[in-house]
Image (tube, rainbow, N blue to C red; front, side, top):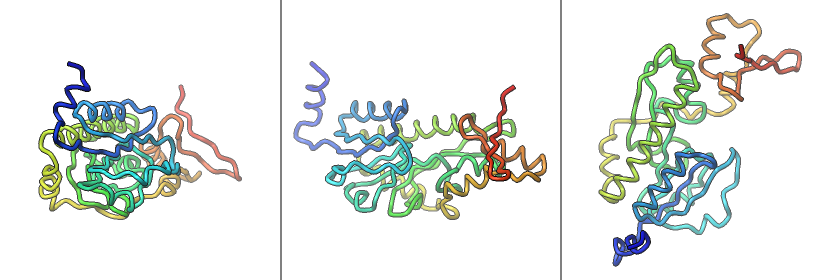
Length: 242
């Protein structure tokens, strides 16, 4: 018996769960989550994001279904679309609740945190504001740099999203209110950070002290997006090449 026939038998007499899945283009983890959704028999509409500021496909406003999943997507979803998810619209945020918005890892490293993490939460009209479903944390050591913490964050985020897909396939829609209840005392802290705040952190004053410079480098340096110095209208970018 082929895969399609098996799926048809599993869902015979029962409507398939419909998911609108926002992932990221050229991202292996997004593709793995998509494959997992298909294996579980979900009816998935997949939308890939390529860059910030990208417009949503025009025909996506016609979608209606059960869940919206956002995994490493750069799209900002309007509330009118979020409301079309019958059960829940869920975002997988690459930071703990202390760091809503953009530049999460950067500001956490700048604050010299001892732990970091990822968050699953319901989406509403505001960025990183909806009820929290789960938070997973891991230790951060003084020797850790931005690329290393970023890699661990993406790994934790993938496993968190994957576990939610599994739970929705096995437990069903009752899983979401259970997770809301479990995190009843967990809330977001502070205002969502903006990209311009990260850009400001990455711009180094020429009179900076060495300790502060090293703190900023640890928090912001990654290949392709180094911190910079502005001098007489010119930009000088940091290079850590030997």
